[in-house]
Image (cartoon, rainbow, N blue to C red; front, side, top):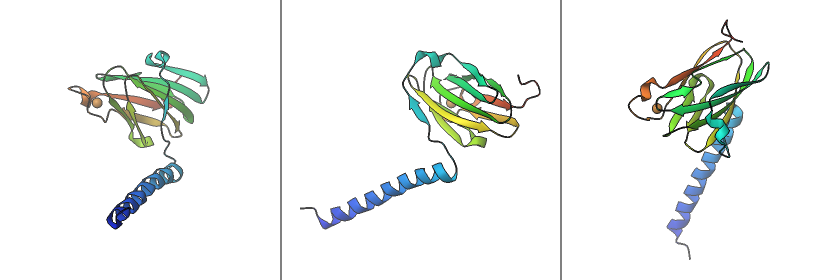
Amino acid sequence: MIDKAEKVVIMITGTILALFVFSILYAKTKYKSDIPECLPYDKAYTEPKVNKIDEKTYQVFAVAQMWTFQPAEIYIPVGSEVDFFLTSKDVVHGFNIAQKNINMMAIYGTINKTTVRFDKPGVYDIVCHEYCGAGHQNMRAQVIVNYPKAK
Ligand SMILES: [Cu+2]
């Protein structure tokens, strides 16, 4: 037999859980915030680089480590779609592009992936928003969209 008070607690818990799931799905559609994917670990992603797939499609293998992001400057043309593959070489770091509503974690031994479209020219700051040690506040990188010298 379930006590009446227990039933109430189960109902409240279920409602709150449903609310959480709903708010994630709502944010995904309404604000087009992408839920990051987690890929199987592959050492290839630990080598920082920018791959140009075609004129408007890029891959960035972003590697976080105390206390830098590599590559530190990413030059792309306006309208580009960028797949970020993110990993860490040591502790847990954050990966935040505030202007693009991107919020990821860089974790040793895992690859997190998200896709971002850069439709407006400008400089987009990537900052670490997970305290990772003495040099944390200096940990940043930039996506430079339509920089005059962009290749
Ligand atoms: Cu940090």
